Length: 363
Image (cartoon, rainbow, N blue to C red; front, side, top):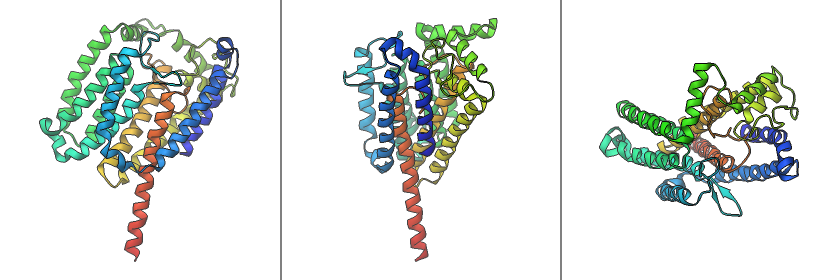
């Protein structure tokens, strides 16, 4: 919890630094985007605390309802979401807007944890167990791809199949399915204008030695100019409209510019700390549902952070994956904090049970 809140404090400072000039030009106020971010951070901290207090066992009885609701929201998104930069991902309720795909990621993790536990040894049988998990993974991933949002679909598939592996599904089933899915996903991504352009730019960058796009070029300049110790918080130059959306998906580059290599490396280390804590909590959880839930959420967080950093450094094609807990707030920061709260609750429940058992044993 301390690590996550520290991330959000650092993220808020970076958002203020990265968004102030853009905010002034667009909204006539240096603090418009920053205030919006702070409101979402407060909601995110509230979600973290609330979900940390809700016993995680209660989710078992509601995962099927939740997955149906999420599917409905994703279908609704295809019809009513306004197109922004060629993609329709947000449902606008006037008072607030949200991105159903962000909710879907964590609801799917929850439902997979329930399915794997309930199927038991049948998860090793393709027809009796494995296929049921695949159906939900493919429904959610397909609905998100259509938006189009290829990067989130890829993350969902990677996390889902990793959970199936940890849940003791057969490696043969996982590998054979992934080969087919990888081929189909590659064909679909290549034939979608939204993703084709990004993939082609990424491939061409390796063949010609040129940069993937202006964003990645400016992001690398930001990272490089930060040096070892950085320019200092609030002293970024690339955020002065040189780097588009520097306060959002490319905030890692501003982080590197302002706190340097050491600061950026420290942030990556602390993402690893969150993952390690998540794995330790998962290992000690009292049931398989808790184990898989804690592992799946922890893996989702570190995978998103890794992909975001890889995009900023030009290792991956450009995606719209935010840096967890740090990027400009929205559905992502609120629901990621809610999911982190679930991990904390699993840890708290496990600790209380161990104390009870120790007390009974002592008596």
